[in-house]
Image 1 (cartoon, rainbow, N blue to C red):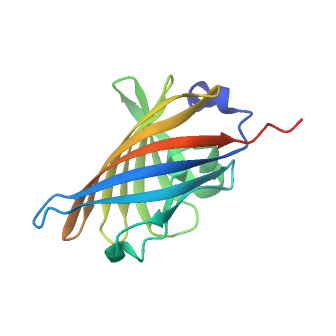
Image 2: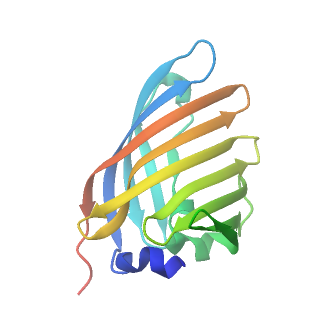
Length: 173
């Protein structure tokens, strides 16, 4: 299943991208704010978005780790196993190999569109449910949008993000 979803990304070693994120509080004072990030992907090493523009109250938030959405990152970071099927997706449970902030994650992979949704629970009580859409970018299957419900204790948020301005490194010869 993993190979079917990401077969066309086999030659993809690295890329960068820009991410625009719109956030909204789901309770009073109903604040809306924008964030921006620069993404960096290196196969098997890292898949992060470094936040370059954010509101002052989010100053402690530096990076967003997207490694859970890319199965090529899993072998070095997570223990994972298939847990079933749902609406054409194959579900995988992930837990960190080296104990960290991730408590549990479930990822739904689709054989055509890759990671479809992710459900993550962190040790601090935060819960995130993300829905992703991917598309063909220069012949590779890459994310283009992400919506998320972030349930952080006392601060529930919604997020809508777009991935754009991809710069894909040439494959090694």
